Length: 366
Ligand SMILES: *Cc1c(COP(=O)(O)O)cnc(C)c1O
Image 1: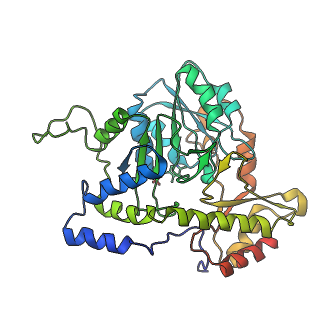
Image 2 (image 1 turned 180 degrees about the vertical axis):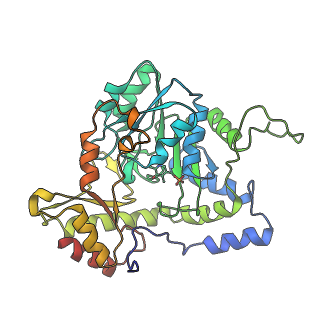
Image 3 (image 1 turned 120 degrees about the vertical axis):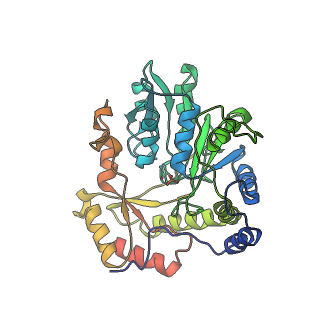
């Protein structure tokens, strides 16, 4: 059956087509084009830190690991409940991921678990602002800063979210963002990095440009870099998207509020809410299904929605429970496992209509 209501699709009805046409008319489709700096400047205005664009969010996290100069023997603490792209970059540089459990109300990395996992080898902690809800950055900073442990934020899902008034991605050494197709804004594929100093930012930019000595025409390179700069075509779409960020987030927040309100009386469903100190972008609204109440599981709910042409996704599989990473598990992660067993992401597109949302709500009611 075809999907009538998808989980999350982009809204491309602003200046996207116009800016793409400008790229084609001007003949500049590749890296280094005029839209790249315009997009980076607009992004920096939104989050309040200077920014450098990259090919995708995974690459952003990888470059942040390279910038931290970590490798074999070093440990990086990550939440187990996340998309695998948080973790793989730790492996790319040969370091060891160590998996923390998550908080049952925000679904983000549990600072108490982090405290227990810190060793002499811990170099970096990567909090993930899962589904757009901020992680508790003051608690993580209190655990990391006195010990000289760096924080690299996986803010790939959290553009526009704030915790304790601070934009997600701007509390640590680096913040990584993604513009993959279903994120809050998209460039087709793309990402952004922000840093705590202009020196670090320029180093990250250097890494995206094959480590080429700035200004050198003679192909002089002083570091092993990467081909990771964003093309002008993608940046053109990104600029058009970020112009509409406030509206796109407001629409997602309104959807989330309406799900929560309309289904507050359904005893086996619990919706993700904001912590009192948080302002979330509600990238993906999610629901926890409690089987003990009425006997229905998240599988039943997902099937009923699917039968009605409505797309959902289970929560991420705890990464430490995959064969690939099981050997890196040092303490049990019951909260992440429980959330994975009960959690479902539900349609959250900014373009979802009231009628469409009513259909989702009717099926969720059961
Ligand atoms: C999307 C995502 C990434 C990776 O971003 P890409 O642009 O797809 O490479 C990393 N971490 C999390 C938590 C994500 O959701």
